[in-house]
Amino acid sequence: MLLHMRGHGESDSEPNVEHELALSRRHGGPVAGIDEAGRGPWAGPVVAAAVVFDFDRIPHGVNDSKKLREPVRETLFSLIMESAHVGIGIADVQRIDQDNILQATLWAMAQACAALSQAPACALIDGNKCPELPCPAQSLIKGDALSSSIAAASIIAKVTRDRIMADLARAHPAYGWERNKGYGTQEHASALASFGVTAHHRRSFKPIQAVITQSLARKAG
Image: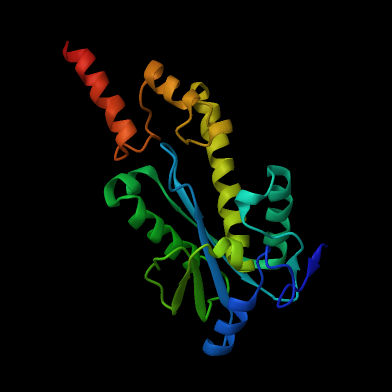
């Protein structure tokens, strides 16, 4: 197992556990790092993950998921699942359209925390807003680049969501979701123009609203 303790004194370009250690001392228990994947795409759910590490069993190479190649993310996903307490929360398209993407994201984060097998004493949240949790929470801007727990949560959320989008792509192959993961690429936009909106598209997002409006106008004309 590629496990090691990462803390003070290692490269500033990699996440570490300094924030977790400080919060653990303050609150007297384990700290969950929480992050999400999929706020920006036109289609598919937003996925959040919560990770509580044993500080002596952190997989080597844990970093912001955006900085890692897909094979590395997949390997780290397995190592994190084996070495940490992990919870996952998924907000579907219906919730995103009903509540808006921010509220759906915060809801998914709360669900991820609730799904942990070990209740944390405190949570460290990526970004500048915290969900409502049964424990104290602290936000950390660019937390996935600073905190090992948040970075690990970013990997779990990203890999989980990518797998969901690959599954959806098999039922809707025209949109290229296995490649673009539901983001607004030219491939995705062209497929929307040709084939229209699916049940997995976020109708509250302006680009999807525009496609629906154009479709209704064509039918009316």
